[in-house]
Length: 181
Image 1 (cartoon, rainbow, N blue to C red):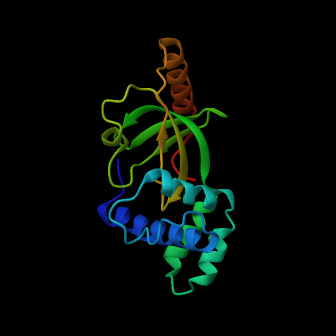
Image 2: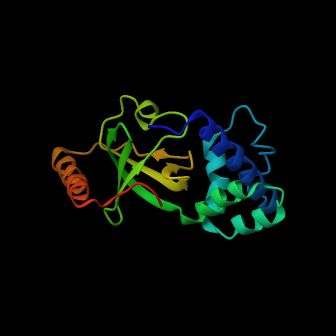
């Protein structure tokens, strides 16, 4: 599952100017001038800027204060990003309504939508389960990533695959799958 085309465009319309603000304000990467206008971006460089944002979440408040012209709906979406979940996750399976991720820290289970492409499309042919480093954020009534997901090239054996499947099945049975933040 992905966001609607309109919501996918809205996400990037909100996300990229925020990253530009972070980069300009804190001088994270002098080579990046205007990410919102750029055609090609190096994900590693963009992640460097995003890491600054996620490490000092109060930057969001400053951004909103310095951009009073933002519509309230957009402010609410951006404010929601302060509830981000970061860490290493097991991408366990793809479903019609999103991809299942299990936190390696606390075994919480999340159903996450793609932004423009589904997770299955983005990681086509990757052996499942897959370990990734990601930041999950709310977008309206679903969970998405910030778009800067770093996969680990680690093969997972059969015993671990069964363990992750069991974690997912237990969460499903008990209604403990997080579908929003």
